[in-house]
Image (cartoon, rainbow, N blue to C red):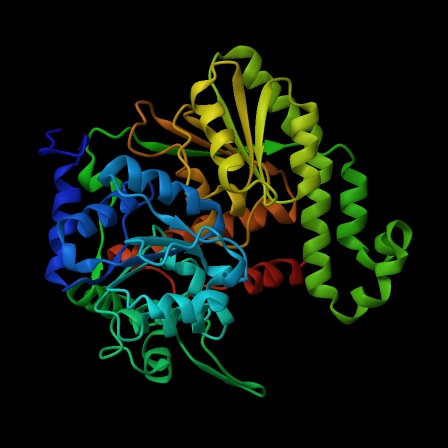
Length: 459
């Protein structure tokens, strides 16, 4: 596949050049909704470099990728960013008032808001913009305030729609308040509203083709890997059924949940009676993970023993991550919520470049964004996240530019359990999300938890 001219030692793909042109076409207010691994950061940085009137610029992103932005800015456009830390601006020695590019995370934005607005920024880049999907949160309100009056706003997300159309409105309102001024109107058109005794809910999806058409013509730049990188190897998903260490214990917990809970964790019994459905699902998922651990470890060690390849594992709970690191027989690195900043980058670099480090173990949410793990071509999902977009993000840590092999994604699922049913629902929802962004027909059911409750309620 051909590439364009070299800029600051970085060669851009033709579709990346086209994306930069499209941002211009949308007058610098756009949603860059490229599949993960297609270089959203690179495109945004080159857009800034080619348009001097876009500075000063501010990047708001998850804390886990702040120093990746610093590194990419120096490497690709030769610009050193000012990275903000902490919640006390007056005590922060990293804040450079005249910096052309400032980077900070959503969680501290409200504390820095006054200082940042005093910079009179020309551009705001919202990386992983689905972080502001809930329009009522403090981070969303602070982001909206920061963007007021700023000429150029670019939102970046490989999964701008992680769960349901209602989550898109906050980003759309920030980008084009003239077109999306009211959630009420948007919600009634696209979110299948329902009036309940507690008020209106907007958890569904309607008129998805119309929404997709509007996004494409008004602000969204959408490229899929299969469309723009014909030489990128495919991604193959496969489910690996895992046997349980103690099937009788699971069956007991599933059929007589309160009796099982009384025997194993009586302190939680009263709370379980008040929210039995939610508690039952949560405990059965955790129990499935614990009881399948031996089978998961056996599969991992077999992979490590019979191949000379590297392997990426994703989990949800800290105990699962610790058990995998302890029992899997390979030199490994771990990224969970406690590994941040330069330590995070060092762990990624070690996995990418140290031949002896064959195993990467990450928390789905903490390690599922902002990093490249193309030294491996195999991912094992050992626990499921409730949000299907988070699983897609995790999968695509290996399915990115630079990958030369087919990407294999194995879902290590406890057979004939609630986890197996949840996996199937999530797979269906991944298709719904992709069809919403790319067109096509899909069912309008966006609620994983309620669908799961309905399946166990029929038992």
